[in-house]
Image 1: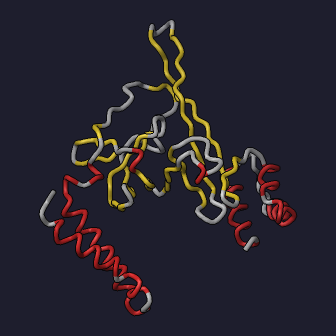
Image 2: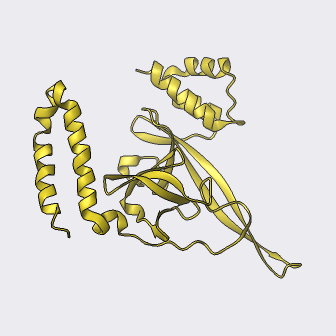
Image 3: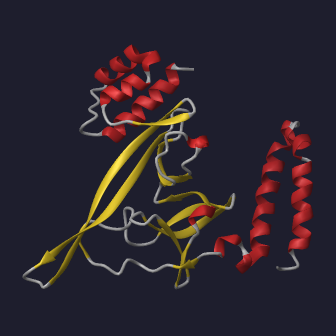
Length: 246
């Protein structure tokens, strides 16, 4: 590890130890936040190639050609984004998200680095935010450990989970196997301390039973159609619920 870290760590400790004093004085709040941000930048710069961010493996694509569907989220090319990795933020990255296998890839020059999922806290790509949640008692209702897209970040958080599978069919004329990617989505809303999957307008209204009449009026007034655009309905209703359920 680079010797410069010897000087960085005391600075980090100094800032953390003095955080209570700095935060208690409004005039120092901007200075404090700037100091923390600068310290993290120095820390990551000193780590260089030994940063935990670079502890991944070389990314290998599926190697298949798909007749329909794509193994990637939105685009099959790299986009600018950010990653919180081992609780440290990294921004201005070139990212590619293969949601078929839930693999996040960063491009450094010509090297494609597959990041370690267990060390990714969250990431953003092309303006879309994802968070990694684990299937445990702290995230009741989450059916599977993995990445979930945050559609609405409020108290009644709305998440989308995309599932992709490969469908294979033999081709007699081409004497080969034709592959397709079949895609589906599940939606979840956080009510209290647990996540609930929402499959219909009725289930959504029932989850918010303490303000059921208001929610029904809101849906009717805004002509929201769950079947046509469930994502839009969930985001709007969750935002409205958070306003009236304070």
